[in-house]
Image (tube, rainbow, N blue to C red; front, side, top):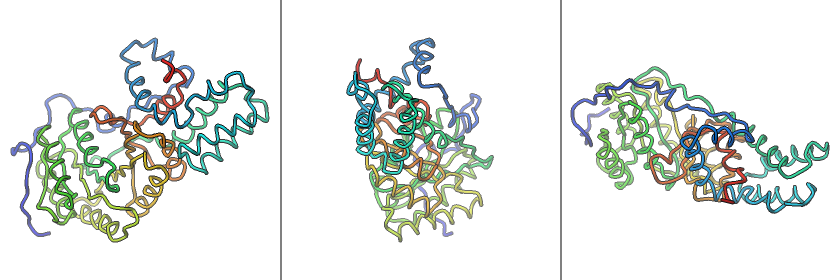
Length: 359
């Protein structure tokens, strides 16, 4: 690999990890919460305001997705019998929320069977059962992130244009840094000068080194250099950005494969994580992206962004049922704190919380 000139944004001396004791990377990225739907609100209330606030924040941020998915079902069907018309209305809402034909068919079959056996007799029971079925779809996607002991731990981020990839990288870097990990960023999106500048701003703001080259440089070379630099500096985590590309552009997908191969020349196990960033508001197209990127580069985890601004958030369930890939994080806002570790139980409960839109 030819030697290239580096731009380091941030402090020039070797990166020193914070003095306070580190949590393990496993502990940082995996804090599951498993609470039964009906008991969850009571448990949060008994724990006090500090416990309620994060859930309430997630619930509020998912308002549009919730309204598109099942919003107002309890009110709409108040006083009505649980019959074929009720189920047809629910089916329509699931399809409009981009849950997808396959998932909708699966859910309706399960619900119809229970109604026919008289296991469901009212709307609250229907919503509770829907909660259980949705949770069953998402629970396998809440998987522990078990990084190897290799350092640096290399995270390659991929996705199409406009999904919020570079911003998500900045938020993830800050999250890891706040938990005591040294981080280095690789500006592998060499096609967009704005992407490099954006990453450098994140670096300057948080005193994180950024490896960058001139516009149009070879992305694989930039990331290769970043991993080498991180190894020399004993940095814990490298997060590499890549240029956005359509999943239908075969030549650009081949470039991603090259980046993976070149990264593996520094560490045979690298990249240790391939994170696909997906814009949840794109609906079924997000599922197509996930399928194509997974086939091309072996995606190991998902980050679903823009869930706060869409009524199409049901695509989460379509992706989960089709691919079963771990969902590492969800994006529900612009703030750093709005990149949230994915918790299936918390997510489904927030979607179906009947009190959320009546306060």
